[in-house]
Amino acid sequence: MARLDPHSYNDDTQPETETLTWKARVDFRTRRLHAEATLALKEASAGPLDLDTRDLEIRSVVDAEGKPLPFLVSPPEPILGARLRVELRPGTKQLTVRYRTSPQASALQWLTPAQTAGGQYPYLFSQCQAIHARSVVPLQDTPRIRIRYKAELTVPKELKAVMAAGFTGREEQGVEAIERYEMPQPIPPYLLAFAVGRLAAKELGPRSRVWAEPEVLEAAAEEFEDVDAMLRAAEELFGAYDWERFDLLTMPPSFPYGGMENPRLTFLTPSLLAGDKSLVSVVAHELAHSWTGNLVTNASAEHFWLNEGFTVFAERRILEVLYGTEVATLHSALGRRALEDAVQHFKSHPQLTHLRTQLTGVDPDEAFSQVPYEKGYLFLRALEDAVGRSAFDVFLKRYIESHRFQALTTEQFTAFVDKHLPGALTKVDAEAYLGKPGIPQGAPVPRSARLEQMARMKGKVPTAGDVKDWTPAEWQLYIEGLKQGTSRDTFRMLDESFHLTKSHNSEVLVSWLSAALRAGWEPALGRTEAFLGEVGRMKYLKPLYGALAATPEGKVLARSLFNRYAERYHPIAQAAVESILNRA
Image (cartoon, rainbow, N blue to C red):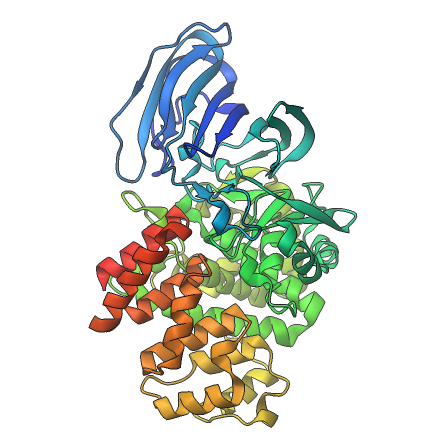
């Protein structure tokens, strides 16, 4: 008897769920889902079944014949939520839980009409990674246990519900509509995803379309029009695409991530709509997850690098095919810098810079950083360098094919490497990546002609001629390379020459604002105040609130801005900013 996932009440001696049938009515007035979840077990069973819940109001639990099953909801624990223990009668293979969600459900954000692009109708979306699915559905909320599902969402008739699943029909009844979806492939629960709003779609290719509010649909379609080329490039590298469609949903600004790889319907932040396709690497990242993460999944958050390190590696291979080696190398250089910052951030908790982590008693959202992404990428790059690209490509396809629709631990991965690439782990000193803090001494270092040019610009104010061919990635590298103590006069010259405070590229803008705030360049302050009210992406909120809170007067302003804008942020982002302000 054991809990194999420190973030789930699931006990490995209990039966596992095979399928979920979910029915939910969306109530915008009370900000609740009124729902029932029918869990079909892999085998008939008896005795206790422990399910994960968070802030769910459980009304009844019945078996397949509608007979009540005894249940107990335990007092909630801070990270895990509350255990729902159901006593199964002998021979039970199915149970139905009737319940409603809390208005504060951690996976859900309810937007008022004023918070949408159209301004007329409300909007709802989910974000279940890492352990927030339990605030929407009572289930075994661990990536160890994959489920297929069918769903019915009842919504106001004038709105559209979309899910990360296959659409099977819509039926209108009076003032409401029932939207039906089915996911035939087994997925980890954190990939349950849906959105409800005034949505329209435009086809991008034979297997892809983009969804968005009508006001931003054309801009989104133009920005993401190359998605089919990405899909073809990815299949060449990693094998057949197993999810039929790769549709995209452009989210409201409050979406807390750059993207979320929900299968069949990837969620994307509108901050990617730069107008020049300069930020579509995020799309490549989420597409790569179709193989590494969605198809082959980490067994728990302790092995998160198996999702993200592989996906960064895959993303950069896709970028290399589509845009060339120099572009991929620039992204690697940005990633290396982000990793160095993350290692510095966790200097008082160096164990969180291991790839193989121990997270009992640690909230996965608190442990979240660029370490599993970028250190994981470096580990895989080291293995590729050690055995050669052609051999590693063969290994990669074999790894994916051998573990389709499975969840893995780090130990299972290393055993597979030992079998198929004997000696490679020793050659790269795998333990330095997996079980030791920081960046290993011999980790790969990105090198290219353009990076050498960037190095020569260090400490200099570039001329218009110097920057005429710079990509946004090069601007980021330059700005982030400005030394601590760079004079305000330098920031003035840069801003007057290149109008960085007015940049339309969010990555460049946030790098600039973060550096300018620390330097005391006052024009950055007003743009920061406005920008924090325009976006909800944590990648941008964290450095900007952090830069503001670095001084006593800035901390007062940061708290004031957070009080003003918090309702616009997703609950996950609210908690992240609150943590920054509390530590400052």
